[in-house]
Every structure is written in structure tokens, then in C-alpha cells.
Length: 237
Figure 1 (tube, one colour):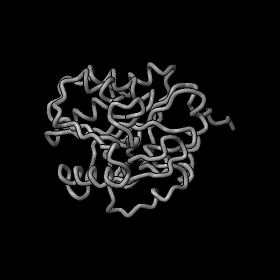
Figure 2 (tube, helix red, strand yellow; figure 1 turned 120 degrees about the vertical axis):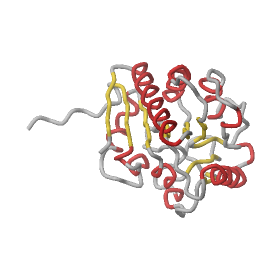
Figure 3 (cartoon, one colour; figure 1 turned 135 degrees about the vertical axis):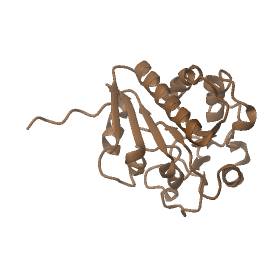
Figure 4 (tube, helix red, strand yellow; figure 1 turned 90 degrees about the vertical axis):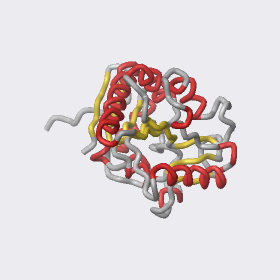
């Protein structure tokens, strides 16, 4: 069952999300001695990262991964890594060896192959990430998994895919597979603003390839939205 939390504004969404992610990471550290966190891009996740930097009491043993990346240089304005660096990595005492960047500048094919190899090196053939932070597009996409795309049907053995025809620029990207996202111990999906309301309503409906967010594993999913993005309450009978 998806856990849905509606907050009065975007700032409260970020605060709730940062607190939840910190709890999940601390749980993983207590249970396994290390924690694995995957980040996404976007304004709402970025605000969460700023708060998360101070929310965690210690970062020893926390590994940072990425759910997707644009095929640009790491200092490009469109880079998810740059967003994470500016909002979290430069603010928290995270050892550089525990940050695993998607090398988007290598292009879709080489970048995806390299990231899959890094995942296997650290987490084995079937990597399990403790917590994935996701945004959602107005079309219901998550990471760089877009509605109806062939990437939704990737072989379960695949871990990271190259995208060459993203419907939103830039067209070339890297993304974790749906299988990896579904295998995470928890996913935290964030949305703010009325422009995301229809996407949130659709993802809470029946699973649908045209709404990739609806394909996430719901019993492991927490959705935190502001009032503008929240689905309308059910009509009274």
C-alpha cells in the first residue's frame, strides 16, 4: 500500500522527505553497517537534499548513487550530479569514494555499461539500494523511464540503460532500470505544484505502462506532495 502524505507547501514536503530519508539511511546503517542512497534531479528533490545534509548525524558508510543522469558534463547546468553536489555533497561530510556518479559525458551506451559495472562491483549481480529519491514528471515518468518506452521492458539482468530518444531534452540520458527501482528497499517520490496533480492521481491508479511511476512497488513507496499536487479527496457517498 502506497503511503501518501500531503503537506501544506513545498518547504514542508522537503522537510518531511529529508527526515524520512535520514531515518531510512540510519536504519540501513544500524542493520547492515552501510547505506545506499540513489538521487534524482529536479527542484523538489534539490530542496530535500539541502535539508538532508544537516538531517543526518553522520555520513560514514553512506554511499550515494544516481537514479538517472543527462548525457552532459558533470559541471553542466543540466547535470543531476551538479545539482546533488551543490545541494548535498558539498554540504555534508561524504567521502568522495562513496559517491558513485553516472558518467553521462561518456554517452548512453558506454555510460550505462560503466555504471552497471560499478553497481555490480559494490552491490553484486542484483543490487539492492536502500532508498531512492524520485521526482515525477507531468507525464508520469520517473528517473528517465518515459511513458510507453522500450526501457520499461528491459531484461531483468540489466541495471542501467542508455536513452537516446528522451521526449524531453536532452534526448540522451542514463537511467536505472525499472527492475532496480522496484528492488529498492524504499522509494520516496516527491511532487509539488498543481502541474503534478494529474500525474500523482494517475500513478496512484492502476499500473499502466503509460504512467511509469505507477509501476513502482507500492508497498515500498512513500509519496510526499504539497496540497496543490495532492489528489482530490474521494467523494462522499
